Amino acid sequence: MKNKLKALPATIRQKKRYLALKTESEKELNCADLSKLLWQEMILLTGHFGTAESGFWIIETFGSKNTSFAIIACEVQKYEKVRAALTLITYLGNSRVRPKVLGVSGTLKKLRTKYLKNTVHY
Image 1: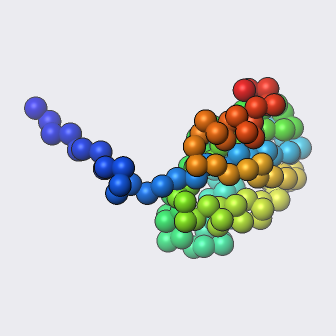
Image 2: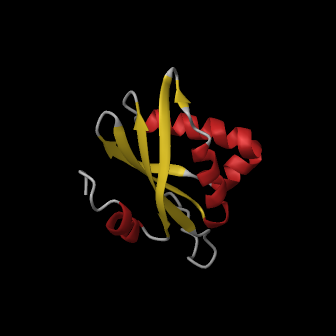
Image 3: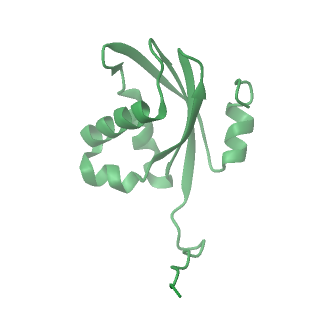
């Protein structure tokens, strides 16, 4: 029988913040493209160590061809650096990209109801 690792207690786990993101672009922007762009800008801004410390990941993306929405999670102490890296994104290949952070929240439920309730997906 395999021993499973126990989950960390809530008091030891790092707290997260969730960012609601709206991107307007000339071509469709999927999760892989957004992740690649954000990784590149985070490495330029904070280096490899700072990028790893931020612990960001893209939870989901949805939207239409030119306008898409995303939910990004990151560590509570580093969300400002993730937000700064998002503002540095301007191009995906030859097409222009304009990301805009709609808001930041501590829970996914509040983020969706407050910032994403008027979108097609929710």
